[in-house]
Image (cartoon, rainbow over all chains, first blue to last red; front, side, top):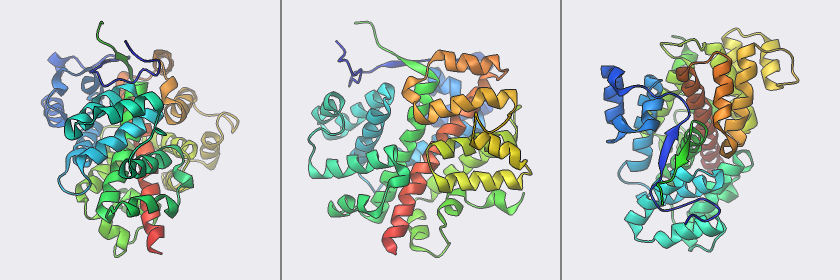
Length: 192
Length: 170
């Protein structure tokens, strides 16, 4: 059963509202960019849609993979937490599903994700989670109104310049990702 | 290629000078900076425009930045449009759409979609894309527009975060 807010840690699928590129007609360049994007891209409606503009997808996939998976800097779980907060605010059920499961794999704390889904980002969190989620929320909702006061909680939990840069990249990346998934297609839930 | 085409857009928007502390912080993730600029080139200066010209792309980006909102990102696209030789009346019509004067039929279809994507992505539906198709845009054009608007949303958050790091140093 799905709660009224629609957010879930279960895997969901996604269907495009536009014609995707027929895999039989892919150019060598498109195949190369899809393979570089993610292992399942050659059969993914999302990637087979984005590959209409192959140059844009190449740059975006390279950016996404560096922002989310580059070594050192901000812990991967913290990056995933920020992306789930952004997705919860923007209402992107698909992104929240994928990245809440990645967070749960990294931390073994799916309950943190479930609380954010059920109660929203204002739910009770520990100091580190709170600081990361509040920064993500500020940049998502009011980028123009952000001030150095919004960095203070991040400094208090000990984040370095590089970690704040990594967090900013992750938050910004999901301003991007959410909008693609929300406006080019829809979530499909597996039959119960 | 002009200087404006090669300079890093985010550095220009935030006012990051090469020797500054924030430039050094950004340099810790050179790939992220490089692929963001690569995205800018692919979306705003594409080798193959596929029927969606540079001026039209910059007008879409300007509208997305104004709505986000980000004065700094909007100023960047306004300057870009001026350097591309776009008429001031066209720029004003897009900035104040739909009350700012006439825009092309294609832009008249695209600009409501820019607003939907920027401010209410959760409210988007299949019919929004059908309206774009009805205006003669291909699936490829619609994907490029979506990538462009979403990319501006990325730029706005990144520019805001870098501005905070800059202000923190002062």
